[in-house]
Each structure stands twice: as C-alpha cells, then as structure tokens.
Length: 199
Image (cartoon, rainbow, N blue to C red; front, side, top):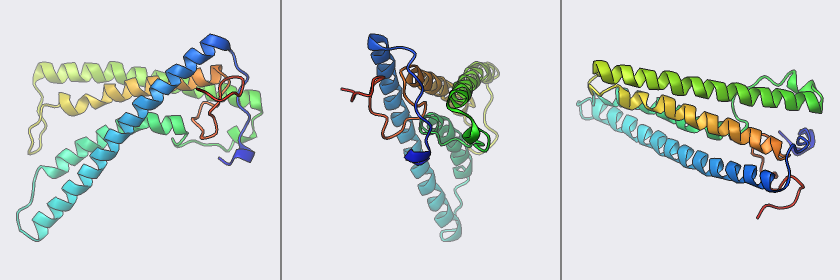
C-alpha cells in the first residue's frame, strides 16, 4: 500500500522498557521468519530442478523418475508452511480490503488486532491437530502410497511447525501494535514507539 494511503500506526499501549522488549521479540521473530522463508525458497528451487530433471529423463532419456512428483508435492506443503509467517509479516496474505479501507483509524486497528488473534488461533489449531496427526501416523506406521513409501510423519511435521511460525507471527504483529507500530512489517517502520530510530 502506498505511504500516502496507509493508515497511521496505532497509539502505543506500552512504552519504555516494555516497548523495547516487545520490539526485541519482533526482531527475533523477523529473523526466524527470514530463515524459514529462505529454507522455503531453497526448497522451491530444489523442486524446480527436480521437475526439470524429471522432464528431461522422461522425454529425452526414456527413463522417468517416478518419485519426483510425490517428493515435490510434500515439498510444496513445506514451502507453504515455512513461508506463511513471512507473508503475514509483510501483509501479503490474500485479503478483502473493500470494507477495511473505508474504516476509520480506530476501527481499522480493531480489525487488524482481530485478524492477528484469528491467525494465532489457526496456528494453535495447526499445532494441536498436526501433532495428533503425526502421533497417529507414527503409532499406525503409515507410509506414503507413492514410490517413496515415506513415513508420513516426516511431511506431516511441517503442519505443526507452520502453526508455531504463524503463532509467532501473530504475536509479533500484536507486539508491534502494542508498541505503536503497524502490524505489518513496513520498510519505513524502523522506529520505536516514540518515533526514534531503533538501535
């Protein structure tokens, strides 16, 4: 969103040492999100290379690599789970802003807080349900039905991991708003709750 159409940041709820602590937590989550999205990017690149290799082997060498499609499918789940928090921090998730752009500043902040709480709750559900899914797969010994015959708890492990990352991203957004910054990590949001540059 252009800077001239962006709503003002919320009024800080906390100040002083607590604001610095919250912004320190936000910086830690930013680093975690960058590491996760870096791993996701590397996995996406590896998937691209595997698909190209599979196409070459199938159509030019006549030797199809049967397990590539299955592995790339599991990689896609991992990419989505690892990249979700970075997208949340940048405000790049799909959203309907037809109504939110018409809201006043206070109502817009209430909607932003409500959205972050909803994302955090979804993250908690992913953690709980994902862990139960992994436990069940491990107990029964479920293997994938494709050529890899992979224990399913390995690809399923990215679901609760993604939940943890989403919870951290939601808490980070709430921490930023409490300190008087936008919930979204904007390039020009480099100050503390009183507008001074962060160390």
